Amino acid sequence: MKRNTLRISMLAVFIALSAVGANVKIMGSIAFDSLPAFLAAMLIGGPEGAIAGAAGHLFSAMLSGFPLTLPMHLAVAAEMGAICYLTGWLTQKRKCPIWLTGFLAFVLNAFVSPLILLVWPGLGWAACTSLLLPLALASAANVFAASILAYALRKPFSVIWGGEVK
Image 1 (cartoon, rainbow, N blue to C red):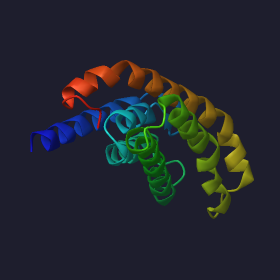
Image 2 (cartoon, rainbow, N blue to C red):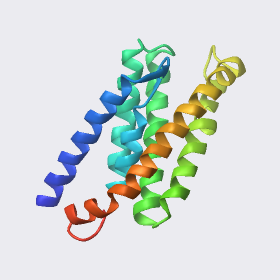
Image 3 (cartoon, rainbow, N blue to C red):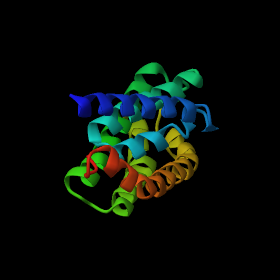
């Protein structure tokens, strides 16, 4: 019971940090909202990272006025959730090194995620290529910072979780 309360409390903190990061814009809805989500995934687990990632993107998109339409941003939020879930699953369950999961998260977020623009009605290669550079830069900054923080916070989190990072 205590562990569930702690997990929910930590999730709330990471969602709040994603909302703060959503205010630090790079371009449009591209912001620092995913840093706390990747960090949550690496330190707590995939489900928590997925929730924080989806919520963070929706905060960022909302603050930008949903520039790609609400349905498109819901799809992107689902993508962010999936990428953060995979990051947490690889880090926590498969015990992959943080640098490797961080690199995979970067590639998925920067180069695979925008491919949805190719199949979305009214968008296409022009939208996809125009977002590649700012998305790659933002993704690199978010994932790199989350990875550094995850390395730094692994030991304190192991104490919080009772001897093991969950």
